[in-house]
View: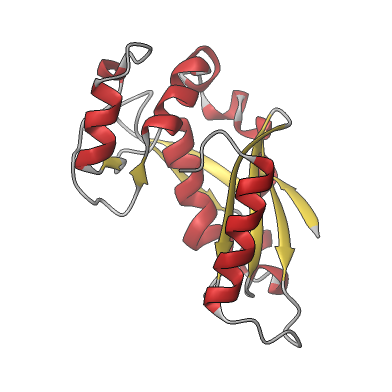
Amino acid sequence: MRTYIASELFTANVNGNFPLDVKFVLKAAEVDNKELFTRGIYTLSFQGELLYIGSYSGQKNVAVVRWQNELQTHSMRGFNVGFTPAAWRTLQGTQQSKSANFPSRIEDSGYLTSAKRVLFAEENWYLLSQNPDNWLSYFSFCWMPLSPKLKRSKKELETLTNQLRKFYKPRCNG
């Protein structure tokens, strides 16, 4: 098990539509990190608070395939962030939300967010609306790779991930 601080993994490239258009690019030192090319379970935390528990069963670099997406959708800083119609309706019905601050792309953009993630981003917008160099270090990933000797199926990995979610109840899952 290893914890990665997001600012040590990624560089934030801010594009035209500040503060919303940010791309998180994996730093060269982590591109070939063999530990990141396996199956496993990960958590995402912000300032020590558990936000999300996920799993990865692919063979590419988990930081590129999943964690870059997590940063964009939890911070609401990715230009490509989109909502499912159900998530958008839920968010519109939430009195707490000021979702007008965020793009309203209601389609599967490959970077789907949820009402819970938007509420998290709004709550922390005083930080997240700044240059990512100021807040990227607040995010961390705990990576628990599975040993290649353990022949767990994708379904078994998902079952274990769901059990962890039920036990820990991260605020941005679901």
